[in-house]
Amino acid sequence: MAPSEFFPLTPGLRWAYEHRSSEFEGVEIVELALEALPGTPPGSAARATLLRHPPEAPSREYSYDIRATGTEVFSEGGILGLTRREFPLPPKVGQRWVEPPDINEIVSDRETVSTPAGEFSGCLKVNTYLAAGDSGCAVRYYAPGVGYVFEEYSSETWGAQVKLIRFSR
Image (cartoon, rainbow, N blue to C red; front, top):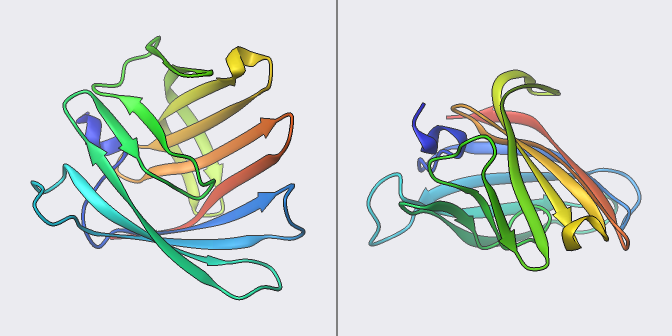
């Protein structure tokens, strides 16, 4: 499977997620759409636009860039507001990388994950050990052909869960 299959950067793709967080009550719906990033080869980068529908608050929108280089997929933002290396390219089980103070590891490429959008098999699973595990942990999953489908994040200061509810091409 091509590495980009776990994080497709095709303009026109659209996702919708349920986002729960210890920072607010209820469920926030987050819509994400990709558009071409000018001056970049197709499939290597995209501009992501997030439209947030928080519970009992006005909707808000912002954009950030995502890039797939020869060595990594890197996001300059996202639903949890984190700038991060999503995973190295090509992704391989057992790969570890450090984004100080956190340690990340690809622990599987055969996971099955169920979300309101359906069941996804052959998923890439990434574990993150916050402050090397002293501050909490996170787990996220990327489905082939779909991308980011689920994340659970738990630190000393906050927790969050993100689940895919819709995907369209």
